[in-house]
Image (cartoon, rainbow, N blue to C red):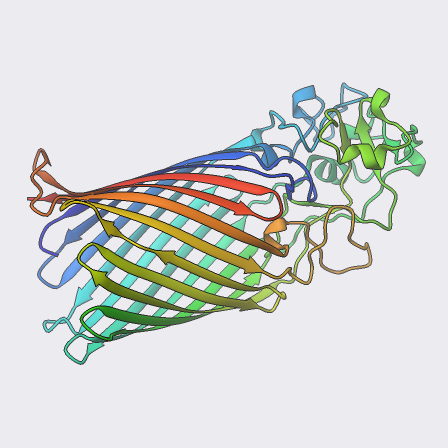
Length: 449
């Protein structure tokens, strides 16, 4: 690299689904996210480059808002030992709350130092990273060594990374309030609240909802990974690369925001008594339910270790001057019972000297984790459980279409920076379990003259 380069990146993402993990595997998953990022590459000398990557991701989530589903009714304004003013606070897994958890901003920063040998056959790099959001913080560091052989036609790389993360856990309102009230439904938040059983009948506080919920003790979550890659130029038109990762995670690997419901214990509800029918268990899962909420039995709990092993390959082929083929396959397996296959194909098509169109298609499928079950299907006797549909069995298809403008001579300029390229891409993603997402991304690179 001879000159400083700056990348401006941005994306808009939206999704819809009916299996929100915060509300136990049912409910709205509506979410939007805007993520601008800037990446600056600075050559320090002939052999070294410093890269600084800073970005934010600002989202609004109907699912996360229901960490406190009663906020719109004012019932949970202050539940640390204070009495609720509303005997029938309303909420629904299908309706977004106005609670503080409905939106958040994730911030990340990463710096990477890369040094090449004089013959450019050995490359060393090291990086530091930081990321945070309102309930999570992450520190990372790592390094890599890359060796090139055979007149740079063969490349082998080794990389290691460590992430030391910590939860600042937020819990579902009813569980957190229950602990604050010293497990007494006649205290604090629950004192004035009516609780109904699964027949829609008002219950006595002495014979009502109860849970063994406990706050988490170990708030750390550490990730260690090692990667090995091999790359080979097969011919003038063909290139192959292989990779393997080993990833070990330790600590609290579940999400404390996510509710779980047990099928072998009675269900209890709060909300509008006019809609507490004898058919409440069936009515609750209907999108027509706008003012009844089921009290959680527990939060998601998962083993405190997880080992992941992905194996993959890329093969790129230059068909002719107007068309190339880029293909990617990955097999993934972990000790939670998840196995997956990913196949991705992209075909860049040069339509003019400066313009390239690149359609793509991606297929993905996975098996369910050993600890996954749908809403109200877990057993209370289990040690681990989740209703997060990211750990369910599903198939997914992704279709993308992008266009790139390349200015080899950086003719367009802003101050001392010349425009090198511009990318715009749209992606449509769909799972076979009723989940749909859209992504629009934009990027441009500027080079200092």
